[in-house]
Length: 357
Ligand code: AMP
Image (cartoon, rainbow, N blue to C red; front, top):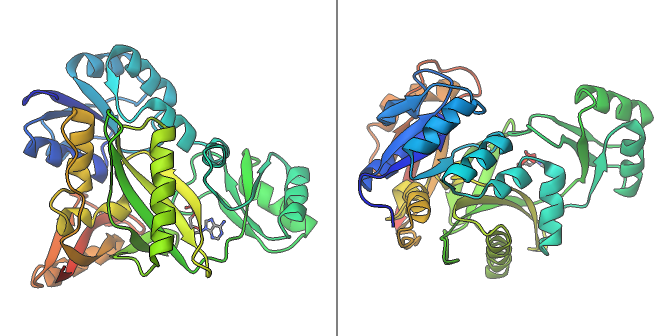
């Protein structure tokens, strides 16, 4: 277990880094944030920021020398940077988890190879591939770039086997390597927040039901309105994934639930996750503390929830609701310290406790 006063490096300066830094401080650990942007959300909550690009070798060296363990708060950290750091110090979660989750092709393949069901999918590099893939997947699907797609970015929906539409779709993603995913007629989207420690112990939070607006998470409701069989299927897949990755830390895993209660995996994020923010209000041990515990070699905490709740993201102008939220009882507010409320920008979140269990 890391001694009190040890230092945890965090790559990325967003709100997830901020919340990790706060959790680390509560457990008596210092943090250093590697982030090129000044006055980022995480920098406001840490004692030190190294202001440099994520792939700046000298900065990475400096970070490695100053830290006892290094983690990350977003999945597009350059893999080479994480691999380099791993030659100098401990990096948790393992760089392999980053590498796999950064590319939808390797992610889907890894999930399927690990015995976890996903929507049917095909690799697509050009119009010819896309037309063939559409034919194989029933003429409908979502074209997704292999890399750098999130919150619905880099995606094109296709609803017919039309050649012109295929040409336009490939142009829309600027010929980037992609996959075509079969369209899933889901009834619900849910996610599991899970932790694994170095010894392979796993802790699973209750499943959240997620609603997206304009491709961005809007609300997470806990508990999800799903059967015990559906719950078991999600948890079983999550455990499989954690062990297959030899994972250390917290991970978020998203699923689609079908009308018959069966599930298919959508994607995982090798980090704390927006759909787990509710844990800071409705569990004794939040996902942020759980992550710090896992990477610091502390025993994992009990993930049980003491209350039902709804987490709502405050996006752009939603932040104007803050004065009203502050007058509510049972509303736990968390703001990210971002000066400007641009459209589609996550400014904070509020978790409303519905009832004690
Ligand atoms: P993603 O970035 O892959 O998580 O996709 C963003 C959102 O698009 C998801 O949360 C779903 O609401 C929707 N979506 C993604 N993939 C599919 C699919 N194969 N079928 C139906 N809807 C999807």
